Image (cartoon, rainbow, N blue to C red; front, side, top):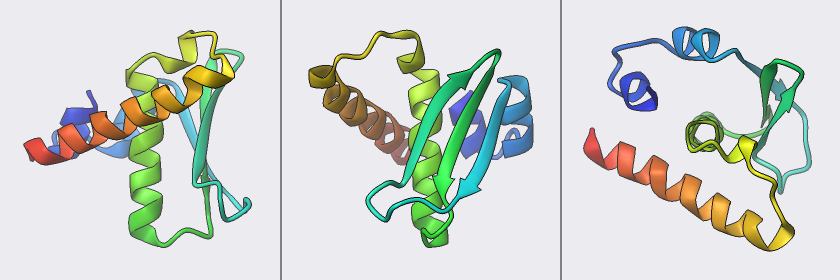
Length: 99
């Protein structure tokens, strides 16, 4: 479904509403670009509002990748977190290369 968003076949609003995702822009420390977590039945994505537009867009795609790769469904040990971050980055790069 993220591929459909990148191709322009659906809007970001359609993507987020169909997946019950709420996106918030929040001031965060500069080393944090974004994060994703489940809150009850909703998935919340928080993006650092201090990021330039292009970086914020990539951060949002990265968090969408975590969602699509079902990373929120896994119990994440500290040693595994970096692997999941790399996997999300590779997924976004793969989708962007397909455009």
